[in-house]
Length: 93
Image 1 (spheres, helix red, strand yellow):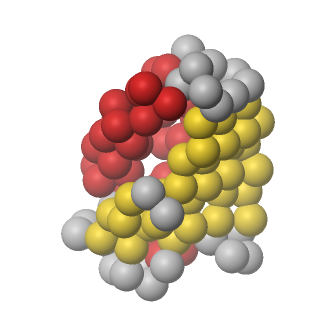
Image 2 (image 1 turned 120 degrees about the vertical axis):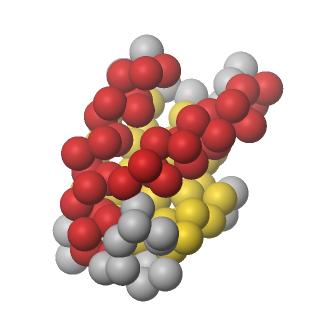
């Protein structure tokens, strides 16, 4: 796990998950990459997989937990990618 984002605006993990589901395609588009997003409504988990990267977000009772795996060419951008993801998720949770 690379990042933990505690809930500040929402107290329910399902609500946080639903808000993030609306936001994630926008975040992916911001990076200009194509990714396949898979959602698990029952577990409040989502993942996005594209060329050279995979991101997973798990919504627990207290926080969103983010993991990002990057290929060799994208590793130098990991901190910027995590910063952007954190900023976008904090807007809704």
